[in-house]
Image 1 (tube, helix red, strand yellow):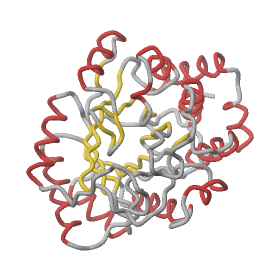
Image 2: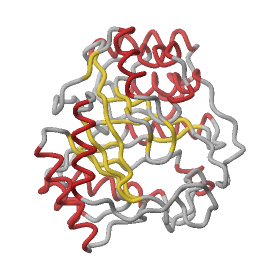
Image 3: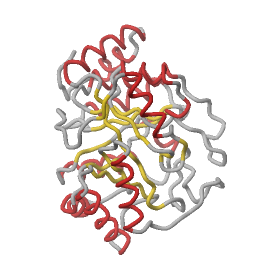
Length: 323
């Protein structure tokens, strides 16, 4: 334990995942100290540059056009507005700026050309630029890379066997192909998942195993807790406990020790004490700002106060990650 491996068996991952929680946290903390700078947390900002109207049927997502939610649709934001938001994010301590668009896949059209210009602009102000735009081809990935894209987010969401219970408009192979295209373009991969979808513990292990056995571990692994949204099929799901989040974070830290493990959606419902436990278990990245695409997130000033209380400092941009 405490080495970068890509040959984990599902049984090995399950054995780690099912350790007593205090032992699991301890082991994750030891690995974290070996591979990461303790007390250093990357602050990222996520902006929805195109909201709603998505043709997919992801059961958790309020942006799917087939669900009746309170999310207001808007077309692609303008270049100047996005750059202004990026500058504000930088002033507030973010070193990565992620732009999300509710598309099933990227189309080679004017909107994509505009996104490429946004990528160039944000990159030029010194921020790591990340996008999450749906499925993309290898050629599109290369265009994003040439524009200055640093990372691309494409979550697995859950384990392969449970995936079809959540999404029918694409399959797991589509997910993996996009990640392969991103990696082949020499763009950092950001890929994790969501817990609280109704999946089993075995499904959570399966997702972690898929990530940890990729040829190269994702540079960033977001761990999201489902935020149930009225109007979606999962609106009545029970929120997961902090201990379930910790178990995911700690296991990810142990089996992918060089990756950034991101405490993502669901943080708004966590106390500072609960978030501190997640950092102890190996999380070293958060999203800042009032919203994560369309769901609530802690206020920037709340995060600054938490960092000061816990003695945390923002991680610099473009710091090398061992994956």
